[in-house]
Image 1 (cartoon, rainbow, N blue to C red):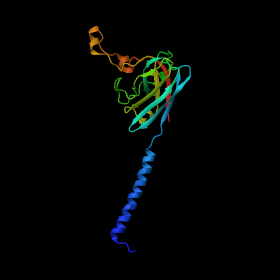
Image 2 (image 1 turned 90 degrees about the horizontal axis):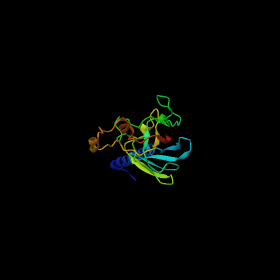
Image 3 (image 1 turned 90 degrees about the vertical axis):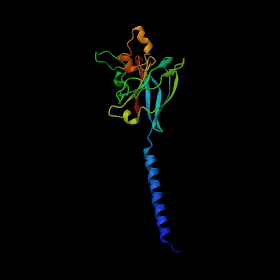
Image 4 (image 1 turned 30 degrees about the vertical axis):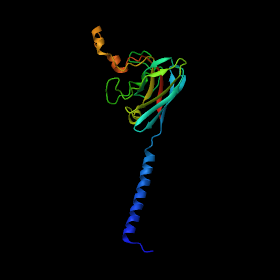
Length: 197
């Protein structure tokens, strides 16, 4: 069988395209990022469960099942340092559990309610259990796995996301103070889990 020049050119083109597709497929497979997880402990070291963080479609899916928490709403955040020390101390030497995890993950240096680490409230049922499923496009693995890592923190109180309505100013409230702007008045840190690959 005699091959004409157009047939040869088409054959070469098909081979090049097929090779390119194999390379692209390999690149896409290499780009798949493994999930991360955080094993969450309370201040006494009890294991409360595991939170899994999975990159999906440009977002992080944060999901898991926890037990042993006080019923009600709790502030739930990614904090900017991957250390969960229940005996951490503040500048005055007072023990402040999990202060070692630093402030909320906040690479853009915004106020609370807009931090990359701000997550929706965590609701705990009367039996002390909670199931969480949150998608966030504010945080990413680059920020989480920087030089000092990151941790998930569960707070004692609900988070108000620094929301003090303007109508309160009539009652003498000038607006959100430093604590509100920093943490949403979500209180102490009752549980912590270092985020790990």
